[in-house]
Length: 409
Image (tube, rainbow, N blue to C red; front, side, top):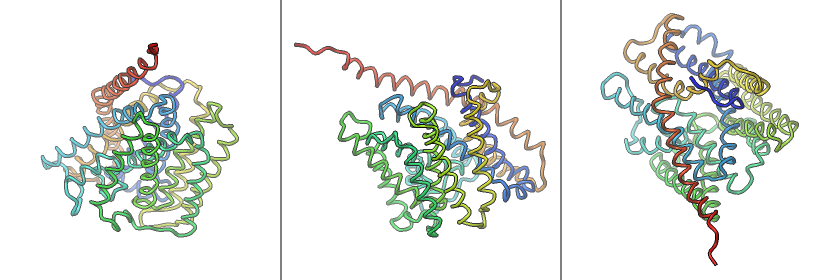
């Protein structure tokens, strides 16, 4: 499996590690339930994996936008990177449900149209809609991050990543200290899920369309609208606590600050101070939140600290030669991430979960998942990315020709 350039090989390695840990977290429900019950209070493997993913996204995504210098081509790249495999996986789940192999979540009184629209925005986790697949909730925070990155870019504050990370982290700590505990999807309960889905979807389409336009005024308005939408939905309508939603955004902007330090746009001292503040606020918030039915602060804090440490080790080793298998695993990590719950759903709803730990079945699951992910990457992900690059090139080319054309006297 080919890997990316040497300069991003360490990021591929981190993605590969994070993907494996997330897969183990979910597959352990089926094959290693006893071990999982002992491990989770001490080390929350799910949070470890997704925090590594969020740090990597924060490092890469704003740099991608700034390298292009164009919001329109940025969104084209994101759509063709994320949606093709997402659509294939959603289609698989719907087909398996129709064949009676798996059972889709109960969406309550929400109409099929509302559920579909919420998922198309990828903000379903923040719109009061149950996820078709549980792991899709992280993509909602990724989408919120994209909207915030574009907002900062359009108002020319994108270089302030360290300040944004610190601000979000401090707000998280303040909300935890003040005991701000909103019920899940609090805004949906107040205004109605259908109304929120409709208004947020329209706002998102308008925001992306305006931010991608050729008018400076429309770009500014679109960027601001998208940023406001993200800042409203994350703290007020997520299913995780307010402080954790803010910490997730702070972690991604911490990744951006590290990228800026590496490329000399801010000092390493500034990035280090930002990391200290974000880590301290996150740990303090989790400790203040305490233990709950499905949350142990020890497990969350250990996972968070290990995720930051893992990112730091990867950063320190960024110029070293890494095993090709590890960087190759990172290349297919998105396929691994989206495909494994489909397999697990089929197993759980047909064979069922094992009462006793079975390491051989756990390993067999990985042995089945990885080759399948290679195929979905090769036949779905990679073509989608090529189409996105070609479309972005066509969008850029007419502009370049207009700029290069001399004025006629």
